[in-house]
Image (cartoon, rainbow, N blue to C red; front, side, top):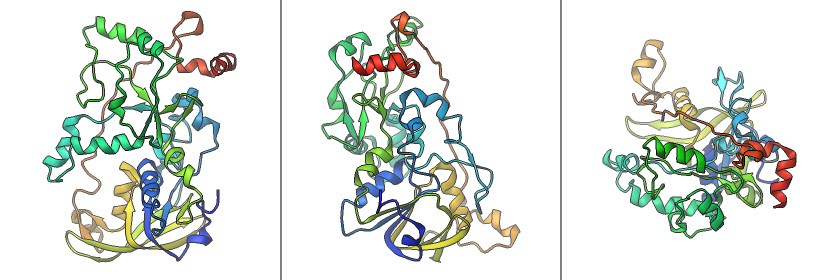
Length: 350
């Protein structure tokens, strides 16, 4: 995988155009897009590992157990990273999620623009979603079987890095029918940004290989031969080194991180991009003294930027998940059946 999966000796004390903290879903996409220009050098610092060859990540039958194993919660005692250290590795939560391909609601995205971010609205958001997708239209028999609402134009015409498809081996027909008789209506256009009802969700899977389509596999793995892309795994960022700061503007050109038992520094000529997830992003800012003044003042610690919003206002989406599993004998198949080697081989040979 060289030269992209770098050693610490290859990156320490060097400068790159961009240093990306976090090789998760966003970090992988950023690295791939930026390095399309061969004149731009990019370093990705990822706390986790490269799970690209691990069968537990690729298998569709392990999606339930991945969220209850060390892939999701890996305890570490790295400096500044106490307690439960989320470490899904390169690809981030796209390695361990439920592979459901949904967009955020239209009102949620339009709210960004209403908060003052001009152009950040649902209409402008859709082309970027289309750019990411490689949609596999399901066979007509599957569309009829599951009463799918499928229009390929919803997914764009691009052959993007993320495979999106509908399952051919499992059926949602029975749970959909059950919900409808309870008065929950069927959504005609399930990705139009208005989510009120029931529908069969597309998944981030490749129907030809029956494998998970993660951000690492889609965005980075095909481009590991790019000489301007370096990725260092098992690198825990301690803090961003601030060159100068005002109340609303920060200048930084370097990042401090640990790898093994040693501490290193790398530089960035253009930008340091923090893409470390909802929990680690604010932690890194806080360790860099970008935090609410009320927190640091009693501790007599110098403040770089007074930013009261750091570490606050975390919002999550509540979910109530019901799982309906069938058996080959019942005629209603589920992903769990792929754990049966005989059934899996039968489906692969179909």
